[in-house]
Length: 499
Image (cartoon, rainbow, N blue to C red; front, side):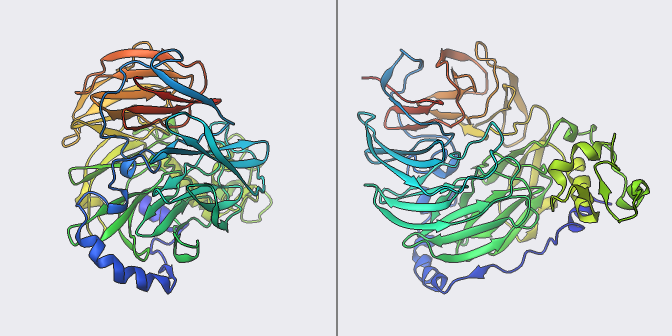
């Protein structure tokens, strides 16, 4: 049975039509003129060079600025520091302000700081309905805010979405959840065409949601039944007809949706069953990485028997397989991840997902953009399967594709051919990595879990210019703009630059 057949046995691949509000008619009307002026890379609402969403312009991690330091540290090129509550969200920027989130006990906080001084300008607290603690690498304040300079939208899995103006006045709130993700939620909202877009991938009832920027009312909602474990923040792309598309990697598939109405347009299979990274686009292709576990390396995938064969262990004859009946098998160890209805037993649907997950493949895929329907055969340009990141997103800078895996191995590629240019660990910065690399001004910045910040020369080599040690945990991705680097550790927000 092929992987697609396995997936189809636990979820229909034909996505139901999106539920659309009457507001979308107005958006479609005004959107035509907007689309006609947009580039072939991404939508105008994300085209600004500022760092207004997770990982900057369209999530690409690259800033158009200059005069950045080639070395940073707790006492090196520090403009200011500000103490913050814990949180894994990344700083995002608007003119004069920095926005991020944090959590103090059960208080979910949105915080605005002055970019010049680092002074906290305002702080708002959201209602909280605490759920089970997420994975230790996650946090109730993991998703990053998004802003257009007029409003700021935050998402907390323990509440939902809230919009403020840039002065901290609440505009609207939208309770969501509870959510069902073994790692906790991680995708950040984005803004597109007067809508706030949120991906909510979870074990059951995954969806893509678009709400009005003005009042938070639902414009459309599209189910994503194939997505079971994901944290990727979407990016935008405009095709040659002027149609703006949302590009979202999830379990097994990269999928493109029409921004205006949530319609599923085209997709490519071959991704891992877990996706936590945000993709990047370059020169007509999208690059996405996914890693499930070491068992999903090519050649290492276990052979999983059919459910009918496995039912030979069904001692009580109830048509399901309990953990006790599966004792000593691989399936027993994976029940917590693949038991979709959480009844501590595998039924046929659970087993189909388990089998599909085990036979999926870790890898980075280079995918040509565009098409209709299943574009797997036509659009996959190349794949690579060694040292693939689980969490850090890829980076394309000065014509080279970079990725760093959770264990700290960096690989650089020719993005057109997939040729590996270099691979290895960063000298002086050997550590685990969860933050994504960022770049500007001829410098690439890598921040490790323990706070080692390596500055690397571009060009495809792995030449380390400097390593600074912040001696604190780092999970958020740095932000860069206007000759400044903003980097969040567990307790502190740093602003680096030249005085």
